[in-house]
Image (cartoon, rainbow, N blue to C red; front, side, top):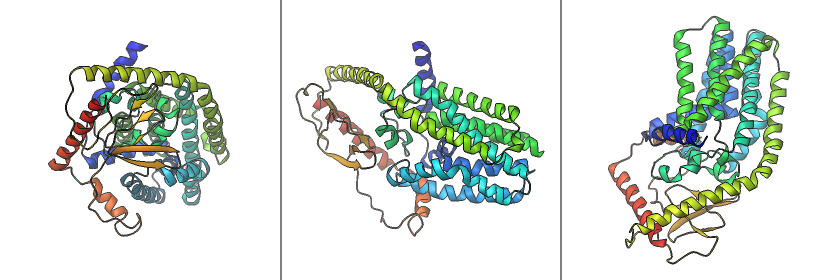
Length: 423
């Protein structure tokens, strides 16, 4: 299994080291993240499948387009303001995910669908989402495979991401989240959604090669995005897509889905909530010792590699703005290695001078990063007002200048010199 894991790492690294322009990276966040967020998945997909099952009903398609536009504006605001899974957005997202989101799309379909077939199709989509998430969760919580952002820190340290999805507070504050790599739940839901869209189009008599190709491309972009953002390996997304497709085929073939109503998605929804809130919490407690052992081994490997680098002759003066103290650290302490992105400061970390700090009060985590140049743009206004979501969308297309790249490179060099000097 160790050789299989190494081969998986080797196949995945070229995808993870790619660096796309900002507007393309933003576009990639949509298939990479929307499928696993109930607020988007359970409002858009039921509308689309209901429209296809009804033979391409124009009213449902228009409603689907309006919902997509609304989520797009909100998503652009969250990304540009670093609000994905952080702070208030995390609380609102969790509440809507568990309480309201699964019934947004179903309610709209029930109002607009000309027949009960559209309602049954929407109900099947919502049921599929929760069944797929439940099926993929158990391997994630028992395999304890580390995510790329956790196990390949050295290889990915210099790879730039405009939207570091895998380094947000969810992966920092949650003990189990960094060990939920196998297999990819997002890829599973995307594979199931693509399969369901094609099946519903066949039911409605509007199936076409172009639709099948589009569904397949979206599922593949989701799998690619999960690797690009350092959340999963190639084997994780491959198994996830296969699982999602199998679950979709099984539900469509084995169940009398045309009789589905509100009951079936409610039962699937409740099952997933129980798994996520009760079973997962129990597994976290049972896995704590194993997680601490894995983290200890990883810390020891980092210490050995740092000692090797220090012994190879890195004796520069390190005249940068970040500096650390000399001499050996007390037993049980380790240096904090800052980058331009926020990282959690753990209890055994010793931070060099010249960093920027903040406190995530919701996650209870102290975070630090390299000092950033002050922004010259005028703030003010929420996403709904002037200078809000329109500016957020405009930021996506802002290209990085040569001066920006040089400044970022100099900052990384200063941080590396300061860390080497501190060690």
